[in-house]
Length: 163
Image 1 (spheres, rainbow, N blue to C red):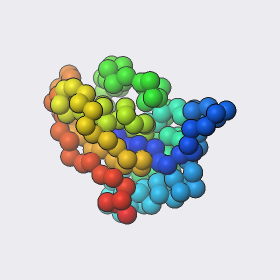
Image 2 (image 1 turned 135 degrees about the horizontal axis):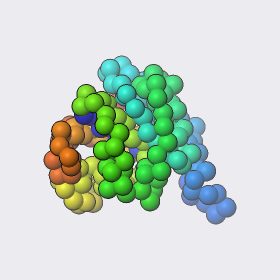
Image 3 (image 1 turned 30 degrees about the vertical axis):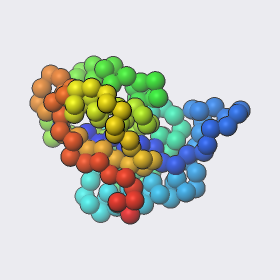
């Protein structure tokens, strides 16, 4: 199974009076995310399932990916919110019983996605992987009960390398 961890695009800065959940993509963030999505489409990347954090900027990023025909299905996952846990997500994931050939994309936030990738690949959070906005990490998940420390990193790309 291929798992793609995708960070949301460039969003509004944090400011007093603006709830984090409602921070939107900026015009630049929408444009850059659309360019990344179009490039992924040109490369033939497709997702069978696209899960997004419930926060607005991630939902907007997922919609852009969907609109560029990278996936037909978008679903929200509370596990992808900034306070989400990879262990809770993995418990949920195991129950889904996706076929091994599934290509699954998760749209979320940093530092979570970088930490999740490290846990899947190295078995621990080393605070070394940083995912740029609209960046992508690709991980091959093994056919085991627990992919923690058993997965293979095959893609770590900042948006500038796709554009």
